[in-house]
Each structure stands twice: as C-alpha cells, then as structure tokens.
Image (cartoon, rainbow, N blue to C red; front, side, top):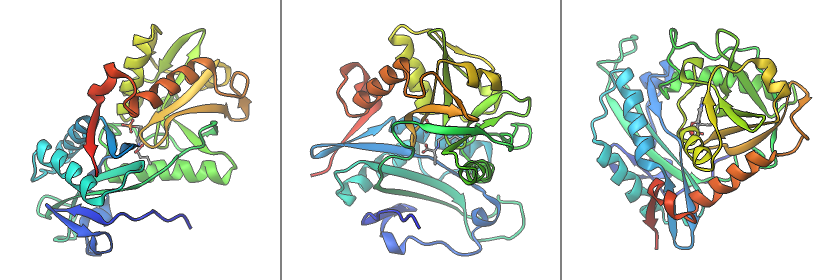
Length: 307
Ligand code: PY5
C-alpha cells in the first residue's frame, strides 16, 4: 500500500498540530456527503528555500470553490497564505512538497443541510515526488463521463466531485492504462481524472474550454500564458475524441501531474510514441519556472526560507 511520507505538523483551525493528532470525527459531514473543498499546491526545493507555485491563485480558487457551496471560510485569503508559509517553515523540509489545504463541514448534523455544521480548515504539507511517469502516460477514454456542470459543477474543486474521477482512474488502471481521459456529456474531450489536457495539431495548441466541464486548472492557465509568450497559437475549443487519435502531440497539465506527455490514447500511438517537441519545450520551461530559474515568471513563486 502506498503511504504518504509524514511531516511534523499539520495546520488545523488556526494551530499547528502534530501529524498523528490531526484527526476528525466519524460523523464529519464531509466524510459522508463530500461537503468540502480543497486545493493541491506544489512547493519546489532549491537549496535552503522552497518556491511555492502560484500560492495566492490556489488559495483564491479555494475561496471560489467554497463560495459555490455557501461554505464561509472563517479566515481571510491572507490568513491562509500566511498559515501555509508558517506551516512550511515549521515542518522544516527542504525537499519538493505537496500542499493540501481543505475546508469542510464537520461534525454536527447528519441531515443533508450542511449550513448548521461547523466549518473546519486544515493545511497539510508533505514530501511528494512525481504523480505520473515523467516519460509519459498511456491513456484510455473512460466509459464514465465527466460530471456535467448542471449536475455537479466541476469548476468547484469540491471533495464530492472526485468520486467521479476515482471511477475513471480505477477503470483505466484495471484495464492496464496509466490514466483516463474523460469526455463531457456531449462527447467532447473534457480532462483527465485529475489533470487538464492539451493537444497539438500542425503547430497549433488546443485545449477544451470551460464549458467542456473542466476544472479551470492553474497549471493550464500558466501553460497557456507560457505557450503564447513562446509564440504559439493556443485555441480553447471543443475537442473531438478522434482528434486525440490523430493529433501530433498531447499532454496533461496539473499541480500533481505538472506537464506530462500522453504517449497513446485507446492504443493509438500519438506522434512517434514519445514526448513531442512542443510538449518538450513547454515542459522544460515549466520545470525551470517552478525552480525560480526564469526571471519574468518569478511573479508566480512565493519564496519561503526554511533554514
Ligand atoms: N482537473 C482536475 C479534475 C483536477 O483535479 C486538477 C488538479 C486539474 C484539472 C489541474 O488543476 P491545477 O493545474 O490547478 O492543479 N488535481 C489535483 C492536483 O493537485 C489533485 C490530483 C490528485 O493536481
């Protein structure tokens, strides 16, 4: 069984608690009904400091997800920003980390109405390496469709949404693939189980629009900005399933996935079956940006001195 590597502290409702003491009650509303929202953030180690990638943007999205569910986070954006920095310093880890803030409805009431259950906020940060294989992944199209926003808005990063992603991910793994590509309810390409998707055709980069029921990824927005600045044309438009089979290149983006090449979809090899040149250029630029090596993108990084 895969186990997380522990860190000394977890920030819970305003205080740092030892890792093993950060616990919740069995009757936590969010455990039963998925009534929580969360974020995934990465911090990259460089000597004695960490660079947190787009920390403010992630916390802002946490508040936006919470707003959709009337989940009034009892902290300000700046409070959670400072709490994250404080946690990273307290943990003292100078290695690549994953940061997981979560706001959720706690123990109080067993009925569906969440509004009378207490709201808790926690932030965990722990050592984390690659999420998907860096050389690339083999994908299948999931038989599970991405939840349509008229049923459950994928634009909110809500805990309950992820049961849809879990169905797709497990289906892909059991069929011998690494990752699933989900279609939206109209049959257009939506996203991976936990990543946004891009394809390249004749030098132009395409990615599904928000109305294809995607999470508006922060890595996606970053890659769009980077690709435009490199001089590529980036077009947000619906993508047909068959375009995945005949495109020149395809890749996933996400906090966990970073920039990961897609090598095949439904057993159709993409391009040469290896990372394509445009994907390679974007991935390398991304890797340099997150480690603070490119001056004009330093604006995306929060530098946290650890020692
Ligand atoms: N789409 C979905 C469904 C996601 O869960 C994620 C992030 C993304 C897209 C990419 O968004 P961003 O670029 O803002 O990270 N997924 C989480 C992550 O930390 C959880 C994955 C296990 O990457």
